[in-house]
Amino acid sequence: PALLSGPGTDPAVREQARLGTDYLVALRRGRFREAVRLAARAWRLAAGVTLPSDASIPWAEGYFAASRAGDATAAMAFADSIAGRVGETAPLPQAVYRRMMRGVAWIEMGRLPEARRELALAEEAMPADLALQVEPLAFPRAVLLRTEGRYAEALDQSRKANWPAWTEMRRAALALERARILMGLRRDGEALATLDSLLRCPILPPHRAVLLHFYRAQTFERLGRAGEATADYRAFLRIWRDADPGQPELAEAKAALARLERAAGPAAARRR
Image 1 (cartoon, rainbow, N blue to C red):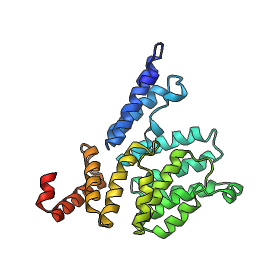
Image 2: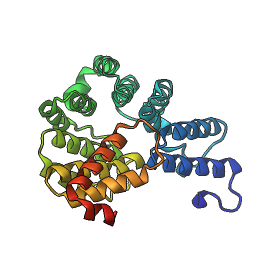
Image 3: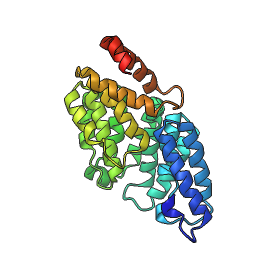
Image 4: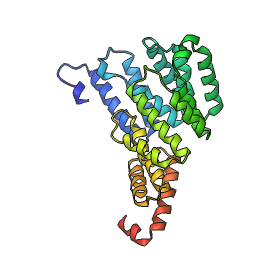
């Protein structure tokens, strides 16, 4: 916010910057319902003012938060608004982008039939000449296949993901998806190397950056590196200590940490 609050700065821009920062903090802490509310407020504010490019509405307009919160109405609204603006300038047709964004949101919410329908509609809307040049739908297909446990097929799709208009954020998200697929294939060394490469990535959405601790901990545990697994589980649970209830990673991390501490014995419990 300090970058946008100098002398003469429009109060609406200052408020936009504050809401954007609060949104990112809420994402980092796993407080997704709070993040959706902040994004909605920022979006309403942005509709009434002309903002400089550095004062955009919160990252992806709440799309990540709404998907993680299971708020289908908000997730679809954010997906449509993003597709509407991106479709004005990107070479990917707006209808394809809209269906793709909706499909990934449904996957995040665990609604796989809806996800399959949206991705099928995206494929139907893809111009034939464009489909021969690039595979923009390979990424969401990989996410869907990984969610279904079809890891070998998911890895193959991830290798086909070659959409040249992707931002660096999108490429980082693809790297994280590949790491999760490699985890599913029990190729833990490769998965860990990919996760480690993302540790200092400045453009992962904040909640995904925190989830790196969780995924690394799982991988360390399977590799028999109990001390490092314990440290990453603790780091993850510390950051998400007041996250929204019901996040599946929280229950898994708590159970795994308890298991590792029991195996380590009383000395480890005292060190904690």
